[in-house]
Length: 230
Image 1 (cartoon, one colour):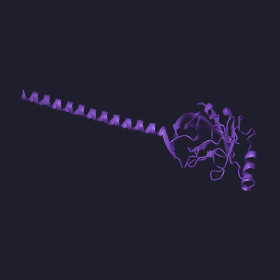
Image 2 (tube, one colour):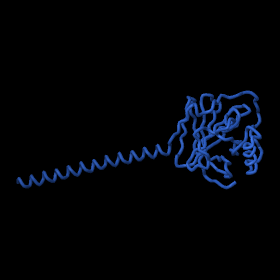
Image 3 (cartoon, rainbow, N blue to C red):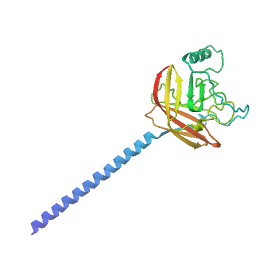
Image 4 (cartoon, rainbow, N blue to C red):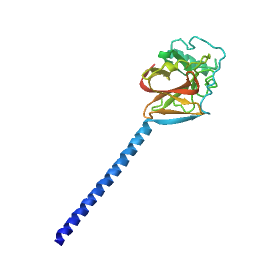
């Protein structure tokens, strides 16, 4: 009788131990997969904060109000880009373009200057933001800001018409880069702006003031889908 009781207690202890072991494995697995899930979420939605010192002043200049599009209808060609670069190299003009941004849906066709140029400012051009990587950098982020509104330099005034799936093109260093918009969101103007993008993709980020809201700015995230020699 004592032997049977001893065997029962032993089996009970073994069963209890197995249950404890299974619970431990379950808890470990849960924590492990939760951490992986959190990591994946953070990775796919990584953000870059730009401070006020890196962002241009978006206060609109109402001088010279225009009603027509302010974009340039001149055809973008390799020869045109080379001509602009050569003009800059020989100092024939203060504003010369090293590449172009084109967004057909909203009739944007505008050149951008070197990031270190004195003309790389929203009061004169679309602006390459400090911390950007040019389109030829794999998994980099090319960040461009521009005015909206009604001023003569409001090159991004129609960006609010863009939707996910719309295309944008960057012509740079003899290559045409094709991007597709994947995300659009607004942020309050508070001296910083967070850029949410997939760091596993090569991206183009466009920033401008939100239409009819001077206290907000809109961010457009586009991912590279194709590139070709130009």
